[in-house]
Image 1 (spheres, rainbow, N blue to C red):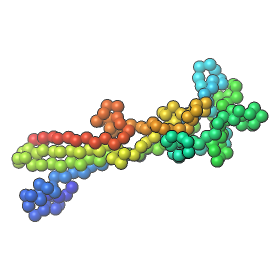
Image 2 (tube, helix red, strand yellow):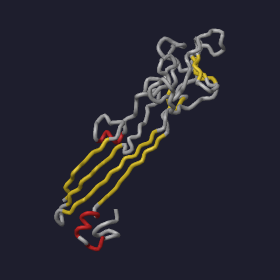
Image 3 (cartoon, rainbow, N blue to C red):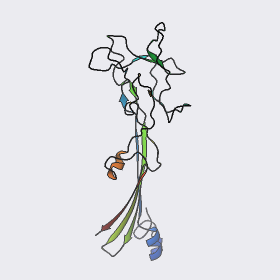
Image 4 (tube, rainbow, N blue to C red):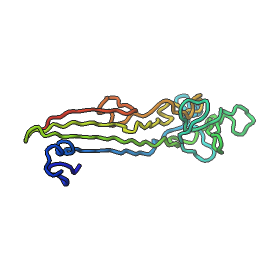
Length: 208
């Protein structure tokens, strides 16, 4: 920041003001990324005995969107009805996305569904902030105190259904994200496995 001795606003050469207001640095990183593609699984092996077939998508593809539904803990990305169990229904073995014309279905025997990675997960954003203060010890030595905030706003980035293990039609938690949040890449500098919540780190460095 342009305050203190040698900066744009030198504070009139006052030793006290220079020590108090000079030597500050503020740094920040803002990350935004679009959602990761993933496959909606049918939960059934309709083409061979080794692989679960992707779901068949009927109607327009609805992108996941966080929403809250009474009786379900945490947010969901698809408010889907139960599997239609009436064989006479043309959408037998399908789950309808409520208030839409979209159905996610178990393919017929021998069918391979609508393919891989047809859905896109939730977008991700995060703000990190660093506040640094330098103190002159001598003409050659400086002491630097750092405060670093990872996920400054403590914003939850919920996993896609694929990572939350809820992207398969036959699972009771299909379309739910609770309570799985993504860890932040930057927070791995503090904790090797990263943390999804706010992390604050303090550091002290001697510069010579």
